[in-house]
Length: 288
Length: 288
Image 1 (tube, helix red, strand yellow):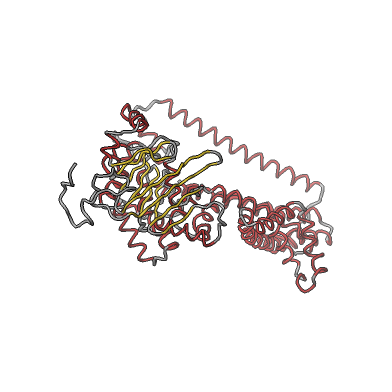
Image 2: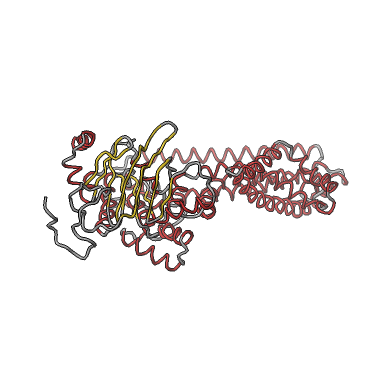
């Protein structure tokens, strides 16, 4: 080992780094590191064991009560999982995209010096955040067609997407407003000093930086939306919960049906949370 | 003192006596390389609430002139600089840059026409900030071509060529594809200077460009600025670097309590000041 362990040393506390730093190897250091490693492993194994134990316990309780029906699971499970998850993801992805666009405009309104735009955006956020999502879903699907039949007679899935988009758009308006305000003042000043016109200044300088700031929050909202989308089962959009309810009821197998539905949502959130975490980590890295 | 002894070159009107308002003592010759006035500030006033920050400032800067503004913090020098390109809205007075004359009028509606006039001033007056304000989501090159392409209508290819030229000028052509997060403070500031130069402004405004830098990085930025000054860039610099002011300035302006207290060639202001306030201010620098 050369005396100058410098350059590689910036890579973090890897084993090379440790060796380069330790010109004099003390026997205790290796032992302490070993002990730490063993401790960490034991901790993880215990966590896995706890999870397995809980799952086994619940499964045993359900089996003992004779509530789980394999026949139902094989017969309807694939439908609930495949179609249900498909529609749930479709609903959520479409709605989060529309909600994001709404939120950008909502935030622009909330930050606008134009009283009309400010008023519209404030009204939107207040109304939507002040009423339950379920009421909004019912109103959009059942009430709006009575007000104007030509305009608002839409399939349940369209009504569901409109409701989810409007609802999340209002909450995300506040996220985007905060994100835009979190872009340092100096960025706007620098762009202004360069003579960049206002509209381009927002689109090319402020918005990209704001999006970076709010991405973790949007990810959170998306995972929340995956679960809130179950509410549109009430207007018979054929998504996960609706399918589970429908077949669970007709076959008198509520335990199996709702367990499958729950597992679908759970699996989806785990998968998307994983991707979100990776995205966040990647963005954090490129920020430095 | 008799007439100038310096040899005449191809410069305009060599040895002409300094006119009133030029900031040079009457009876002395104007430095030969100076052209016609390009920035003119008249009776500029700025209030922050009841705080009277600028109390009627008049300043004239000529083509190819390097003016350094010095003074205690709170004397109004940064405010003066920021009023020239309307990053601060003056309360009263006139600002003229390259023939474009704008009267300060805070009551004027901020309509499209007004904003466009301010933008035109900014296109003529580039600015370099204390804390760089580079756009973090763009490379060094991206920072340099952004304003020419979006604000000045320069075609992409020409903007890139121009950006490469000015990155070369500040000695950072090898960093053209680096993001600001991977540059040192001194490098960031040099990219910021290149970014401002890419708009080919009539005058460059520097707002304490080395105050946010580690001491060992100040030199590289000052060197670039000195080169620019000697190459005939018109610049107005707010600075605390007295040594730099003595080397690179055509004229030093000492501000105190919102007015210009004393001004003239650096030898006169920095070595033989007449005003008591200037002497007091300079004494502190001698003690350091």
